[in-house]
Image (cartoon, rainbow, N blue to C red; front, side, top):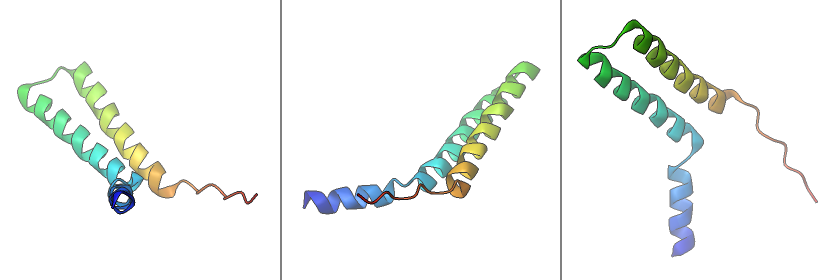
Length: 71
């Protein structure tokens, strides 16, 4: 039973899904603060955070996989 639950969690928490959630979460946080009002310096920091989250998502999807070593 535990191994089945562990397999379900591993398939649920893939890096693609987690990186997509990161983009969503950063966008939601930035949007919340943008609605309250931000200075130009805060806008610059927020835009860099969004760009960084998108960069992580792109790297996860395009980075080549490591070659498996056989012993």
